[in-house]
Image (cartoon, rainbow, N blue to C red; front, top):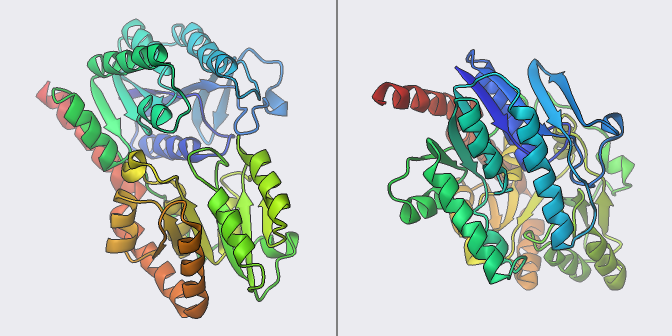
Length: 409
């Protein structure tokens, strides 16, 4: 079996899709699948091409035995819609230009968003005689519309039409959450949709085998402080203002808050911290995936928020899995599927109403009054993801599904 993964985002970039696709590729490679990757020059999340890749239009490299093809991409820090579209479409065209010269594949797995990469995927699937697997990690353009990021009706109509066309031309559609799968099945009942959840490689996240990296010392966090941590994109969807506003109300408690990462909202969050004079909030730079486990080792609780939108009731932030694998509990500000799984079923932490500052403050005070539960819920988390979100099991089920689907056809 030969598979090409087509994605705009891939290591050495850091982030949810980067880590998930990299682990998927490695796990499939271990099953003797011939996996290659077609991706862009790394630039995310700072929107600057990494120094060692500067000036290159295309290249081939190996990462942990994976063959990676990279093509050019227009990079901009502008938040304007035109410049953002140039960013997406530059890779749409450069990926096809490079990809059409590659050999044939059995499958092309295309990561969405960005949805526009579906143009490339459809053309390459025909050019390279490959069946298209379209992996949906976010229901775009629906999410962009409901978050108010895109409001032009003509543009939205074109995007929804593209979504339908891609699904129609896909051999298989995979969805990252059950909510995504349900949405696609409801709107496109004739399509084959498979739940391909995120998970964690438990061998990479062994809390007893990972040492502290001196994270508290580096950022001068008092040893007696309970450390609440957010790590990931500092973006629109997360509603991270709720953390800083809660921190302002908890200035006199033995608590520190760390926001680690980059993203389009970082400057706004820094301004809010300054306005509220929150000296108990620390901003930390993003780190590579090989370093994150050592940082998680030094935290107490991970805050996992999203904005209070109906759309996010089917969302499961990927950062949850590594946190729980390291036996650290979560303070979850997400309704729907994530709450049902990790709070109601797994008892892996605490819940606060999304974007509700007072409720977040209340839950943090609860945690301060029952610190023994931090350890207990952390152990629950490791047990829960081991039983339900072991990446090895997830990939094996996906691989077997493809084999059975081939047999039926």
